Length: 77
Image 1 (cartoon, one colour):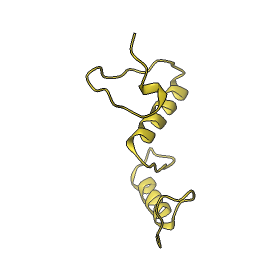
Image 2: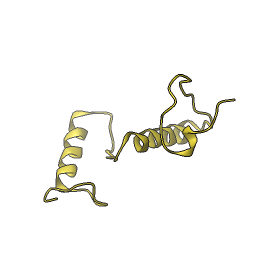
Image 3: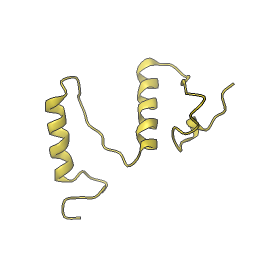
Image 4: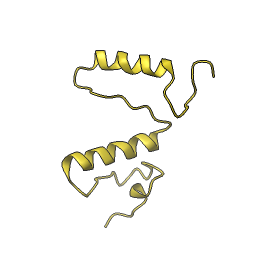
């Protein structure tokens, strides 16, 4: 807990890591840390939909788990 453990505000260690990442990755503008793969996948889908303006999301039919959010639980047509 002295260096942070997923609090609502970033710990100094997270800020340092984010700054290092931005120095190393030339096309990156921002860093966002998340708790799990579901949160990251949902954030990526939301970002992609907002950027492209598209409504549909392609998913792999053989892999049933993408996220715990509603968008991934819908049955394909």
